[in-house]
Image (cartoon, rainbow, N blue to C red; front, top):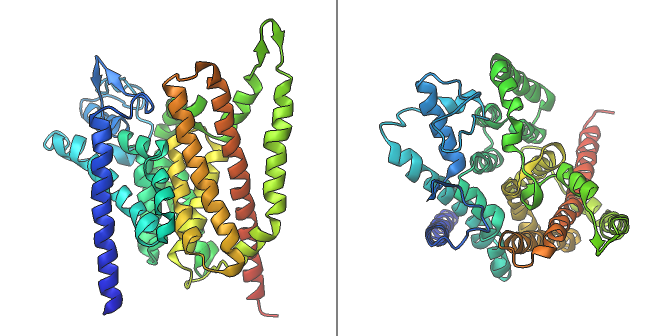
Length: 418
């Protein structure tokens, strides 16, 4: 009885915090304080809110008019083509309830997102982390995904539900729905590593997803022809591909002298060496951290959320060229880090948590300086520094995934009858 009351109280506090943070961010947008740090979507001198969501709604409207929105979408202010799955072209009654779809629904998405992250950042965590946790709430990735109401915000909510839910059928539906919407959530099938008959369940889900995608193959071809529309560059990018591109074209010159060769020293001292140090020094910590992972029905929500978020963020970073708002998937690591009470893992959990804090803080500071041209001469270096932090952090996340995979195989092999 007491547990239920306590749980209801936590939900209530999370909702209140969600309302407070939604209101604050709404005021920051209304007063245009977040611009130009957040690149404003302006058309004919009119600021467009929730631009990544409204392009989907406008595509639905144009589809009704007979346009192939994968090829042209004149209903959108910037003529952006549809780059998502067919399922998002079947939203009903948009013309009947335009204010709900264009204004209230994206506000609801943002509120739900802020309520969920408030729950594990402030309600369920130690009070000593509350101040630094504000860096996550008011970071560029968080504000950008809310201001744009990008579909990745919905993908994050689905990831949360998949991690929280233990129903096989519901998880099937959620993963299939998200996969045929944005494709990369197919990696959420990793949730079935916490169940019995793993490979059968994964095979069934992948088969259903690919069958649906196969039936939409013509649309998929058109989407991939438009892939430049959902690729980011510069300081707004989050990917290994962008880092390599930026490093390859990065030049250093003073006066008439070319010092570009210095970038290779930078690569050695500030990228390769830190990656080696991070992973070599943390080898026993990572091994200990992953050794307590359980891969069965007794696994906790925090463990499941951590694993799925790690895989999702790694897949996005190493495979695609993404916008910075995809970094919200890092938030899925935090519940496990802040609730990992094991003595052996406590140091590494805190280390990784504060690494994330520093990463979000510096990302926000660098983008503020870059977008506002405070020190224009530093802009190329800010881009390089931002990507350096990303690649170092992602090397550690990849290391955790590797050790977790080894732990998974070890657990499964130990269950094999001798």
